Image 1 (spheres, one colour):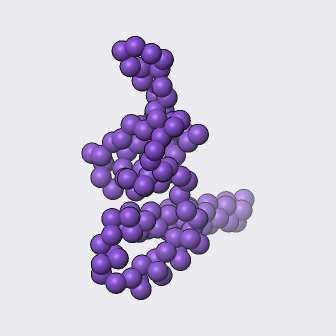
Image 2: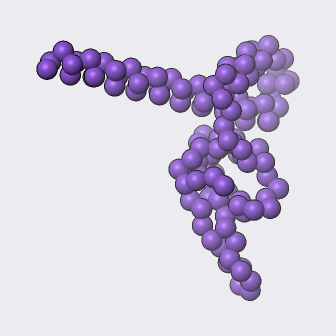
Length: 122
C-alpha cells in the first residue's frame, strides 16, 4: 500500500503524488479505500483509484540508474516513438527521478558543508 505524500507512477497519469488515502462509500454497501492521486506535471489532474483491485498499473518510481538508462534510450528513439504517450510518461518519470536525486545530493552537500563549518567554529 502506498502512503500519503509518496510519489508513485501511474500508467495513465505518469508521476503522481498520493495526496490522500480515503474511504468512499457508495449509497449502499461498504466503504472502499481509494488513493487520491495528483499529477506532478498537470496539477489540475486528480484521480481516485481503489487501493485494492484496481486495473491501472501503480508502482514505485524507478531507480536513478534506470532513469539514466531510459534517458539514453530516449535520446536514440525516433520521433514517432518519442511521441508515444507511454514513452512520454516514462520520460517524465525519468526526469523527475533524476531531479530528485540531484536535489537530494545538493541537500546532502549542504549538510556536509554546514557540519564542517560548525566543527571549525568550535
